[in-house]
Length: 297
Image (cartoon, rainbow, N blue to C red; front, side, top):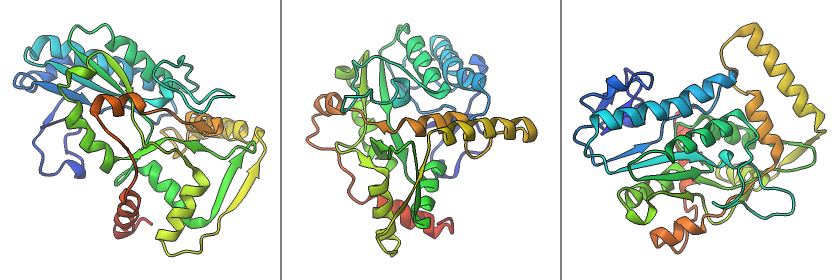
């Protein structure tokens, strides 16, 4: 059963019983939580031109859910909360990866709002688990689709001479992990990083996409000085003021892209779940085929 903010459930929820809720109103959860043993919180705002919107959605929305659980969810014994690698921030110079004990230094409002939500959750009386997700790609994901289109175009921007290196996971490989985490007492009141064992260079990823599309395995890079990233952020701010709404790219996303290295260790999660390996085996190909079938790639 899914709880959704939308009056019409998303296409990927078709066939799943849905109950509509409002993250501004704890009372809207009445009749939705009473028969549940656990809740997986996957909701959140990842893109906005208004910094305040991140905190309203990600921190305050979680606080509303916790209040609703206290009122209407007496049987809920576990809350699994999807946080983000951006709550920690990119890898500091001289390090290979961050882990669950790394100091949190978010560089975006999205990351800071997810960290603020984690801090709210740590005060909750019921058992909780924080799952810090890296980039999650797959069907329906617009950010992942933008990277696929970049690969198809064959031109990869590189700002400041640093090609992006990042941890990632496809939704198809993340989803089977969630049932193993729900009501798993080994994970209670703990923080765990997800992601494949092997991070990927964005250029390497784009080449793999081009091979799947039947294109020559050639990729040109477009080196850009670092100041172009700051110029893009200023330009996006102007676009927001003139047009309103959220442009396809935001200053928050540009700031994260400029950081370059987003790699986190998944060893703690693998040990807790008894996993020998977490690797991508066909999810990229499946995603490419799906987007092509939708006429989007």
